[in-house]
Image 1: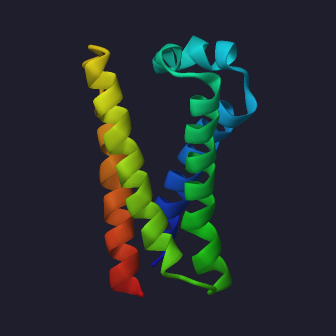
Image 2: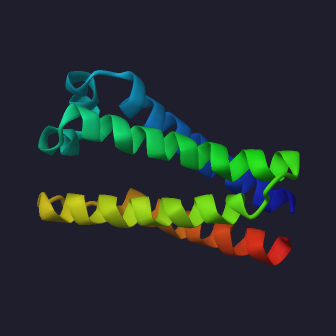
Length: 119
């Protein structure tokens, strides 16, 4: 169970950081490190960031409070969908390096499954 919490915490931190950056910084700043942003409107980038932050919160808060714990694996599986979308965007842009996206996808998938099994 400790390993599951550590993995969940790492995944939540990654999404909180990435989503917070997209949500709180202007598009021009986001584009400096996240080149995909040039293909999206500022409102779309903010929406992606909000979804990532909500996913991070959804990974931690339900299990921590023992309220609606079904939301934790649901958030993990929703983040799998976010990564599928990210992989598609990066490949369409001709970016071959999607290793980070695949790692995040697999981690979110594993965490979702393990929270179901642990529940």
